[in-house]
Picture 1: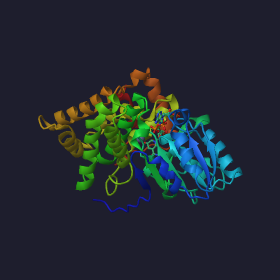
Picture 2: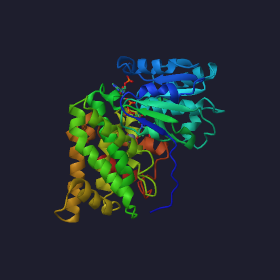
Picture 3: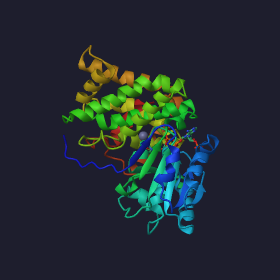
Picture 4: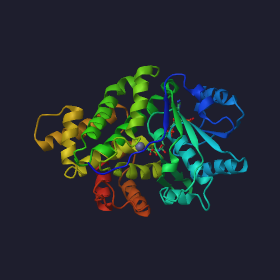
Length: 387
Ligand code: NZQ
Ligand code: ZN
């Protein structure tokens, strides 16, 4: 196991009817800005519950709506202007990963001296202060509710960049599984895939005898596979949604990633596909991961065999046959959720491969993966294997 430091300060308030607890979670004298996405938070009644909980106390409460999926710098800078002019001192995100990531960016940008896009360009390393914020999660997928990272897109240049800083952990996150009942099936499927790939990014690398991290990761993967059909088919099955929500949070709150090598190449290549073609985040991961596992099979051999045996119960055949089966099962899991694993499903071909490679180069994504050996030539092989 590698050396590590682990500190996650986010308080989780989990369960049914927990939105009302905002009345004590948000400081009583705060100048609060509620940030949300499009129409869903209003339509589902979650926003009304949030407003009611915040109405108690001496707070001043304002709102900023319209944060889009894959939140844009352009939109977020309007929220920054509101925060500055209204002297807001506490942010509350109500939504999925996009709203939470956007809120993290606003928290840092509002107090940043200089051009805030530099925060994305420097991956968050230059954040020295941030406003405190909490979240109410409505979409289990990204883990943003209990981590310090975010992803923001500059529409003008199609640049989708991630940032991370210890100042950007939410103070608290309210996780009420019943708030996910209104999700369209496509978003539930996306959430399952995103959480699955967050786990593989930290697990499917090379063995370092990190026994409990491995078993945790395998448990998360097996749970996702087990609950997937019910999670999609029965929107108001509380127990299933509760398991999905907590699994997705645990998949990216630092726990399974402590002391182990991490990959993240699937995410970095996927971000370029979203920035160029507006494909949902999770759907880009389903395109890249099976192809990447195949191209990186030598580097990942030990873990691929372990994954096949422990997650998919594959015990027969030669090592290469078992790896083939493990990759095929992964692909079938995504496809079974209605999520394509081939670029051709989006009418994308060789020209898309060239365009993604150009973006990867422009963003310095030229040595990805746990061995930093995924250069542009290797990314090309991965993308071509996904055609
Ligand atoms: O905009 P509204 O109307 O609210 O609708 C949203 C949105 O259209 C809808 N939705 C959310 N909760 C709902 C709901 N509809 C009905 N009922 C509800 N309860 O769902 C749509 C998608 O929302 P979004 O927040 O975009 O999805 P997700 O949570 O998958 O977030 C994706 C973003 O997170 C980033 C991605 O890159 C992408 O930008 N990621 C953030 C990470 C992190 N911070 O650690 C890691 C991830 O790998 C990922 O990169
Ligand atoms: Zn993700």
